[in-house]
Image 1 (tube, rainbow, N blue to C red):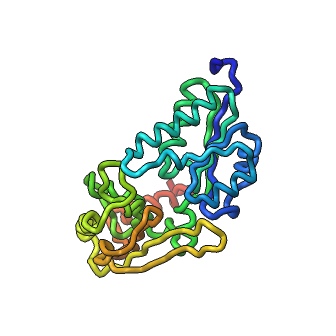
Image 2 (image 1 turned 60 degrees about the vertical axis):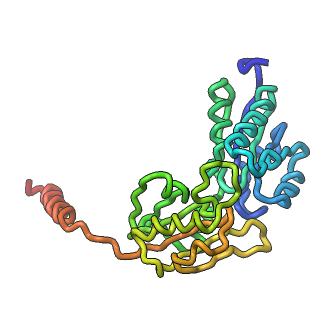
Length: 273
């Protein structure tokens, strides 16, 4: 069946982070109306809950395997999803959190489906970032907020602004170049601390955060010194947050220019100019 005559379509939705609490009505309707549902979720209990909403839920978790490249895994997921779209099915991909955050397969599946002429789009969900702001009481608009996948600080020369919040994702995998491991050890986090110590003192207090995925859970929040990070327990689900190390530095030259511009605007408004 070619795309021109096929009703096949794809929507990728976010289930949110906490079971049953974050699923919006639009995402729920896509799940219930789909012919096939693919599940990329973080917990078997969540998958069981999803099965109550649809009779044909296919887990994507079996594609993962220790020692197997995650990129190979992701490509297999995309092919499984697209096979059903090409067969004329209304396909819904359900992913924990936001389907477009740290999720290669949903983006790629939509890209491929669109390139082949199928209708495909993404619906947002509540992400770990959203929960982090709420649980840690952080307003990203106050000092600014930088987000990096932790390995990027080792693989590339990135600029860190220590007057803003720094949020590091997947610290438990930092430095992994194989894409085939599910964790890296203290020696890798030592290198991360070495990079961070260029901007932050070793006694700077940092937070290891893990959001709740079940209603009976509470978010896990641990505060340690930066120097303690290599020996800390850090899993794939944990995020590391570094608060600002110093105050924002005023740009006096630019402020003077703004003051001068304000005076011109005031005169124009008064009809003087």
